[in-house]
Amino acid sequence: MAKALKVSGLVVGLIFGILIFIFALLSGSEEYGNDFWSLLKNSPNALPWLLFLLIIWLAWKQELMGGLTLIGLGISLLFLFNTFRDFQWPSFIVSLIVIFNGYLFVHSWWLLKDFEPE
Picture 1: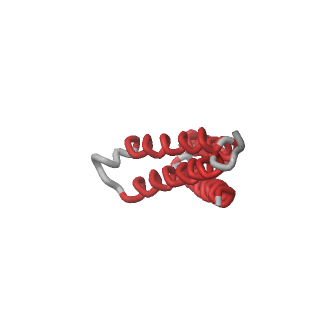
Picture 2: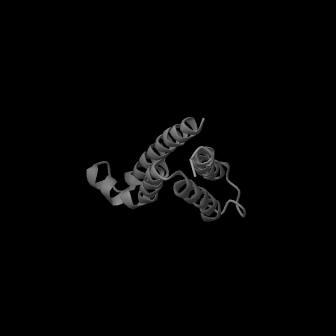
Picture 3: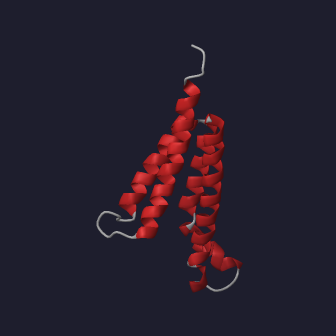
Protein backbone atom coordinates (compact mmCIF):
# COMPACT_ATOMS: atom_id res chain seq x y z
CA MET A 1 0.00 0.00 0.00
CA ALA A 2 2.79 2.42 0.90
CA LYS A 3 4.63 1.73 -2.35
CA ALA A 4 1.41 2.29 -4.34
CA LEU A 5 0.86 5.65 -2.61
CA LYS A 6 4.44 6.70 -3.31
CA VAL A 7 4.20 5.73 -6.98
CA SER A 8 0.78 7.40 -7.27
CA GLY A 9 2.20 10.58 -5.80
CA LEU A 10 5.07 10.48 -8.27
CA VAL A 11 2.85 9.82 -11.30
CA VAL A 12 0.22 12.41 -10.34
CA GLY A 13 2.92 14.96 -9.51
CA LEU A 14 4.86 14.45 -12.72
CA ILE A 15 1.83 14.51 -15.00
CA PHE A 16 0.35 17.55 -13.25
CA GLY A 17 3.69 19.37 -13.01
CA ILE A 18 4.65 18.81 -16.63
CA LEU A 19 1.21 19.88 -17.92
CA ILE A 20 1.17 23.04 -15.81
CA PHE A 21 4.80 23.77 -16.76
CA ILE A 22 3.99 23.53 -20.47
CA PHE A 23 0.89 25.67 -20.02
CA ALA A 24 2.86 28.33 -18.12
CA LEU A 25 5.60 28.29 -20.74
CA LEU A 26 3.25 28.66 -23.70
CA SER A 27 0.44 30.80 -22.28
CA GLY A 28 2.10 34.21 -22.55
CA SER A 29 4.64 33.61 -25.28
CA GLU A 30 2.35 34.70 -28.12
CA GLU A 31 2.75 38.32 -26.95
CA TYR A 32 6.44 38.12 -27.91
CA GLY A 33 5.96 36.36 -31.24
CA ASN A 34 5.74 32.83 -32.54
CA ASP A 35 9.31 31.59 -32.35
CA PHE A 36 11.76 29.98 -29.96
CA TRP A 37 12.89 33.31 -28.52
CA SER A 38 9.37 34.15 -27.46
CA LEU A 39 9.37 30.96 -25.38
CA LEU A 40 12.64 32.01 -23.78
CA LYS A 41 11.26 35.46 -22.96
CA ASN A 42 8.22 33.86 -21.34
CA SER A 43 10.17 31.17 -19.47
CA PRO A 44 10.17 33.01 -16.09
CA ASN A 45 6.42 32.23 -15.88
CA ALA A 46 7.23 28.52 -15.90
CA LEU A 47 10.10 28.56 -13.36
CA PRO A 48 7.88 28.07 -10.27
CA TRP A 49 6.59 24.84 -11.79
CA LEU A 50 10.16 23.62 -12.24
CA LEU A 51 10.48 24.14 -8.48
CA PHE A 52 7.35 22.00 -8.07
CA LEU A 53 8.96 19.23 -10.15
CA LEU A 54 12.10 19.45 -8.00
CA ILE A 55 9.96 19.07 -4.88
CA ILE A 56 8.34 15.99 -6.46
CA TRP A 57 11.83 14.54 -6.91
CA LEU A 58 12.62 15.39 -3.27
CA ALA A 59 9.41 13.69 -2.17
CA TRP A 60 10.35 10.59 -4.12
CA LYS A 61 13.66 10.41 -2.25
CA GLN A 62 12.40 11.51 1.20
CA GLU A 63 8.65 11.13 1.52
CA LEU A 64 8.11 13.09 4.74
CA MET A 65 10.19 16.16 3.89
CA GLY A 66 8.94 16.34 0.31
CA GLY A 67 5.32 15.67 1.26
CA LEU A 68 5.30 18.36 3.95
CA THR A 69 6.95 20.77 1.51
CA LEU A 70 4.23 20.02 -1.05
CA ILE A 71 1.50 20.58 1.52
CA GLY A 72 3.11 23.88 2.51
CA LEU A 73 3.39 24.86 -1.15
CA GLY A 74 -0.28 24.04 -1.73
CA ILE A 75 -1.36 26.14 1.25
CA SER A 76 0.89 28.96 0.02
CA LEU A 77 -0.74 28.74 -3.40
CA LEU A 78 -4.14 29.28 -1.77
CA PHE A 79 -2.88 32.62 -0.47
CA LEU A 80 -0.87 33.47 -3.60
CA PHE A 81 -3.92 32.99 -5.83
CA ASN A 82 -6.07 35.05 -3.37
CA THR A 83 -8.43 32.09 -3.11
CA PHE A 84 -10.03 33.34 0.10
CA ARG A 85 -10.72 36.88 -1.14
CA ASP A 86 -11.54 36.28 -4.81
CA PHE A 87 -12.57 32.65 -5.18
CA GLN A 88 -11.72 31.03 -8.52
CA TRP A 89 -12.33 27.33 -9.06
CA PRO A 90 -9.28 26.64 -11.28
CA SER A 91 -6.77 28.09 -8.81
CA PHE A 92 -8.52 26.32 -5.92
CA ILE A 93 -8.34 22.98 -7.75
CA VAL A 94 -4.63 23.50 -8.58
CA SER A 95 -3.92 24.17 -4.90
CA LEU A 96 -5.91 21.13 -3.80
CA ILE A 97 -4.06 18.87 -6.24
CA VAL A 98 -0.72 20.04 -4.81
CA ILE A 99 -1.94 19.49 -1.23
CA PHE A 100 -3.34 16.05 -2.11
CA ASN A 101 -0.07 15.10 -3.79
CA GLY A 102 1.80 16.03 -0.62
CA TYR A 103 -0.67 13.97 1.40
CA LEU A 104 0.10 10.90 -0.74
CA PHE A 105 3.80 11.14 0.10
CA VAL A 106 3.25 11.83 3.81
CA HIS A 107 0.80 8.95 4.12
CA SER A 108 3.26 6.67 2.29
CA TRP A 109 5.97 7.64 4.80
CA TRP A 110 3.59 7.05 7.71
CA LEU A 111 2.76 3.55 6.48
CA LEU A 112 6.42 2.70 5.92
CA LYS A 113 7.61 3.97 9.32
CA ASP A 114 5.52 1.35 11.12
CA PHE A 115 7.46 -1.44 9.40
CA GLU A 116 10.98 -0.20 10.15
CA PRO A 117 12.83 -2.16 12.84
CA GLU A 118 13.92 -0.15 15.85
